[in-house]
Amino acid sequence: MSDVHNEHPEHESPIKTPKQLIAVVIAAFLVPIIVIILLVNFVGHGSTESAGAGTTAEAINDRIKPVASLEIKDPNAPRVFKTGEQVYKEICAACHATGAAGAPKYGTAADWSARIGQGFDGLMKSMLNGKGAMPPRAGSTPDDYTDYELARAVVYMADAGGAKFPEPPAPAAAAPTTAAAPEAVAAPAAAAPAAASAEVGKKVYEQVCAACHAAGVAGAPKFGDKAAWAPRLKEGMDAVHNFALKGKGVMPPKGGYAGPDADVIAASDYMANAAK
Image 1 (cartoon, one colour):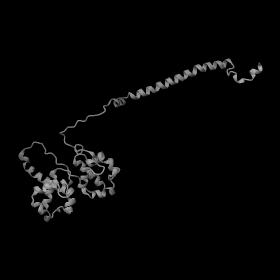
Image 2 (tube, rainbow, N blue to C red):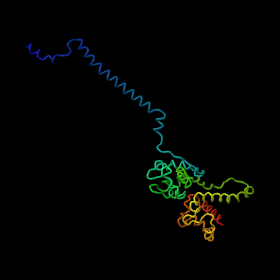
Image 3 (cartoon, rainbow, N blue to C red):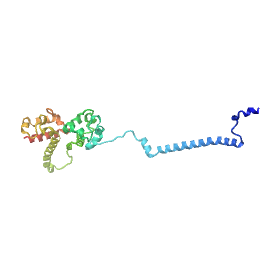
């Protein structure tokens, strides 16, 4: 029988002394307890940090803030017109900053040279009516941006590409409502509109009309040419104004000008007076 037990030594227990038995029993109790304590500390510490992070004033305000906000504007307040740079950054830069969808890239003269050759009125016509992938008014509405603001954006981009278009004339300001003695203001008030109208007419001519009328392009009566203007002046200034506002031949309505009708009439008067 002793031979049989000696043939299987691997079945012998690793615990051979009472001390080893005691050590194994203690380890069996202590190791699980230590593991449980560590897990409890880890979970409790993480929960405290998360709770603290979520209860700061900034975090609470961020969670309870409304989804939308309401901005109340006074409809009677005077409108503050945006600059060309502001309009460019808000609605034009999406394509013109990178040249996406065939748009002429901002500041790249090679992209703008052919377009600048169309003149300001040609560029403005593309802006208002749309061209290629660009929708009319660059996707905006007259409530979003006035024609004047869009014109400023066109000049801003074109001038960055090599043009030298002047700043578009601002729309005529509303008449002042300040009460004043009629006797004190009667004389200046009669002369001021005529002077302003002539100045505006000259600016509109230089900005829009000169592209064709300075050289007589496409049959346009040349500026200062009495023979070319005689047949038109013979029809009367009402007819001249009507052509200027509604267009004639290849000239689009208002010559493509985006400002008020009064500015266009002033420009036609300016050209007519130069041919008299």
